[in-house]
Image 1 (cartoon, one colour):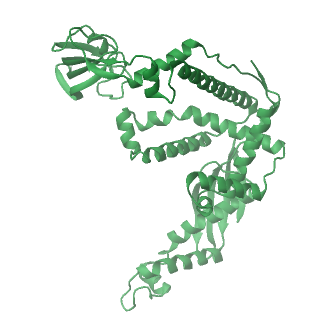
Image 2 (cartoon, helix red, strand yellow; image 1 turned 45 degrees about the vertical axis):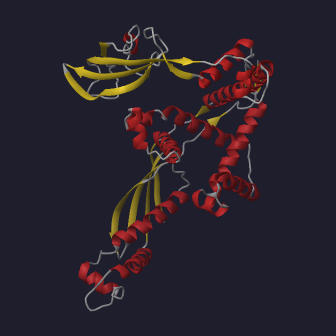
Image 3 (cartoon, helix red, strand yellow; image 1 turned 90 degrees about the vertical axis):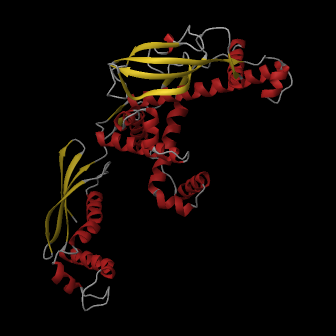
Length: 426
């Protein structure tokens, strides 16, 4: 039961709620029923010891933790609903009193969804520019296909040039001492890739296979390995082999190998059509992004930081799920990328902030437009989700609430209103 709700600062409320003595007693009895089969008392078969006997042996409060943990989400959740708050993060809860005679009293700090104001969301003017596809664009696309079809061949009789792939041994030293991770053998490095420390690749250019030489570089100040960041280093290099990418000739035979067409002209015409369609989609995406960026600029709201952090958590969970489908863990990915958890998390901050702002704007528009979504539409959407992810509708409902699906559909309808009323100019 809600006892009080007071605003302590913007979007933050302190609420007090309580469970009566009768509710607490029922929760304690439930806790006893759940745990009694795991408790052995001399003189009683396992699971048959009376509650009073257990409490006499282990203390009256033996089942209190379980009872409170069961009561807390229910009582606090009901109090939040009664106070008409929309929490955006897990409430911070403390127990202020506990007694079998008076029940349990909780105090919770709740971060609630902010008040949102928005206007002039219809008729937003946005520039939409579709790139004209030229013959040069087609030739560049063909060249990209050639690069994929090329093969590396060993180069003899010349020195390393930019764009070559070199096979090298290297060993790094700082102040004359080797450092961890600074040694590799038969490593394939493409010159000009920018994969290594600035200045490293450039110093290999001009050398011949069989050369042994030294490369001097300085690690960047923000290098992911903090123990070497900002320090000068010397690398001993042995160049084993130089490879170059041999590209196929662009002719009818090449076209037959990489497409369903027989002639180069047919292939070019098809590429131009596809590039034109891609340019149109890219222009559509870019103009939509600009439209919704402009929309969020028309919104005013004091957004709590917790909303951004929750969205970042959500995006990271989605990323982790995609990694798992490739049999990778997040720790493996971070190690491969040389990133800390903190720097990785920060990569999601900008998209998270944009998504939170846009969602708040669309929810407010849905409210202003009085958008209603029927139960039938919700069920239909759940069916689409189930089909897409390969689950039953019951499995989907176990993971998402019907109200969250309804809210998603309302936001989608609000986005449609904004987009259909927008004025796109070339």
